[in-house]
Length: 220
Image: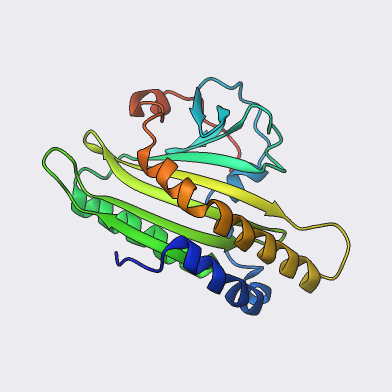
């Protein structure tokens, strides 16, 4: 994975790209987390952790994908911040992890604009890690999404943080897309570098065994 522009510089370029492309991408595949978050979850929150300045609790799990939102952000239909922890049970080494990261990168590129990628080389006792950030476009929202892909023991793991911008009320669809894009890029410019540093240093994810034990949703 190659290194792109730093986030602050990428934010200055992303607005024009998003405004030009968001109309055609509005029907694209939903960003990671969006489809699952749109499904109502009757599961009791069973796992909690801190990320940044907020406490997160479990909202939804299925097929290795586990979603958490802040205690104060309980509506899975209209969330603002989400942490997703994905367990890749079929990933057991750095080569397989890189392949997963590149597949996610390609998928995000289809649903939005990649603004940064980075690869952290392996070191003694520390397998390589992969980072990416994107602005993803949905039919009725945009997300600034960050992804960190690492080995958790002998299992691949994806740590994702997303900040969501819903469509503002009123105005034409074009006006709404323009406002969401502007808000997303402004947020990325102000918070992108700090959020990347936070995610890359974060060690608060639940253990893989605890994630596997979470109750599974019957809804997609």
